[in-house]
Image 1 (cartoon, rainbow, N blue to C red):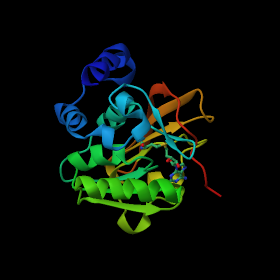
Image 2: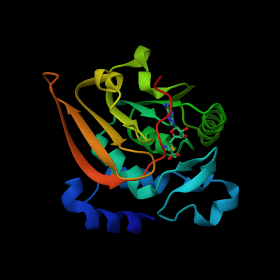
Image 3: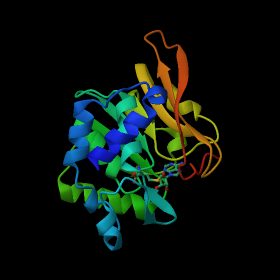
Image 4: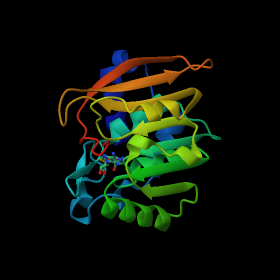
Length: 211
Ligand code: SAH
């Protein structure tokens, strides 16, 4: 799996503006047991570099995309990060290896509850999960060093930009459901100015809710 990720980084390096991923990110990818987050019926594919179904019409993201989003978020040890779209909890676990505290929101109760159990079983103590609509972010715990959205939005939810610290980053796929989405990196500088760039074309399940 790690070799497949390195190969994808080489193919996409001009777009993603990286020649290699941070060794801390690769160490987290090698440490987290992905087989504990996949459907037991798909155990043989747990370390294949592609997405897999996790029930309720949702997927656990492709390992390369998980590693890339983590890299682009540029998270540091003392950091506080928000994830929208807990899903299986796999990306949540990767983040928890790298920062001080992770908050993760899932809109489908069944998935959120199962991910929470799985993360507790593995022993993570720096993750808080909640069931709800991530469009509103997590006001009580804001601001965040980084926000990662793991479902595709039609437009960037403004609350998620508001809840970034100065110097913070929002990583979010934007575009129509299942096709031609852009993985966008939104950066808020020390003065609060916002800029953005597109790292890659991606295909995520849609971000629902927002009404
Ligand atoms: N990070 C997850 C990705 C799961 S797929 C993993 O790798 O396992 C995206 C998830 O986002 C789905 O579980 C979906 O239910 C959830 N989702 C969609 N819209 C949402 C919203 N508005 N708020 C929170 N979660 C949402």
